[in-house]
Length: 389
Image (cartoon, rainbow, N blue to C red; front, side):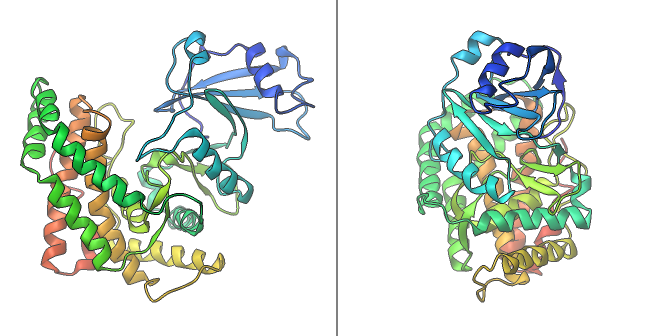
C-alpha cells in the first residue's frame, strides 16, 4: 500500500494489532512487545479502513510492517469489529475472489502479498510507495512500467466468468430503465449550477444506445478479451519509493474481471486528466497522452507480452492496441458515469458531478471523431480542455 496522509488516532490498540498479526507471524511478531509496536491509520482507503502496523525490533524472518485492511469505513473500534466481507456483485469481487487475485499477483511480485484474512478484513504486504500522479505519467520510465504492469495482468488466466462484460452491460441497461428518474430527481434537489449541468447531460444521453454502440465497436474491431483490472484511476497505481525491477505496481483488485483490455488501456489514458483527491478540482491540468506517448506505451506493453511468452497474434500491434484503447476510452467514460449514478447511487458532491460532466462532454467529442474517421489514431490527444470545472 502507498504512503498517504494519516490521522493521529489509529482505531486499533497496539495490543489488538499485535495479537491480530501474530496469528500469522508466529516467531518475530509473536515475540514482539507492545512497546515496540506503532500504528498509523491511513486515510487513502476510499472504501476500506487501512492501518499500518510497524515494529522496531529485528526483522529477519518476518516483515517489519504489515497493512491491516478492514472492509468498509469505521470511526471507532466497535465499528471495526462489525465489518463484514464484501459479497461482490456484477462490478466488484467478493473478498474470496479478491484473495484469488492476491495469490496470483503476490508470488510473482506483481502486487502486494496476501498474508492472511480474517472475518471482515485481511493482512497485506506493505509497499513503500506513493500513488501515481499525472506528472509521472509523462516520464518514459514510469509510463513503460505502467504498460508492463497492465500487460502482466492481461496475461493472467483466472477461473472467473468470461461473460462479465456482457453481464455488466445488461445490468447497466436494466438499472438505467429502473433508476433514471430517481437519478434525475436526486440531482434536481442539489442547488448548484454543476448539478444542473450534469442533470441536463444525464437526461439527454441515450445511455442504452451508447453502451450498445461501444460494445459493437469492441466486437467489430476484433478487440482482445483478457483479465482486466477494471479500475484505472491513479489511486490504484503505486510507484515504489525504492529501485525495483518494475517501479510500478497495480493494487486494489475489487473490479478484476474478464473484459476488453482496451478498457484498461484507454481508461489509463483518460485518467491522466482526472484527480479525485484535490478538494478544488477534478482535473489534473494534464492532457491525455499524445499519439507519440501512446505508441511508446503500447510498444512497452507488447515487449512485456513477448517477455512473458504470450501468444502474439495479428492484432498484437501498436496500431491495433491504439485502436483498442480508443474504444476503451469511450467505454471507460460511460462506465464511470454509470457506476456513479445507476449502480452505486448518485454522488451529490457538485465538484464530483463537474468531473462527470467533463467526461461526458469528452465522450461526445471522442465519439464524433471516431465515427468521422479522421486520423482515428490521434483520438488519444483529444479532450484535455473540454469544459470548465
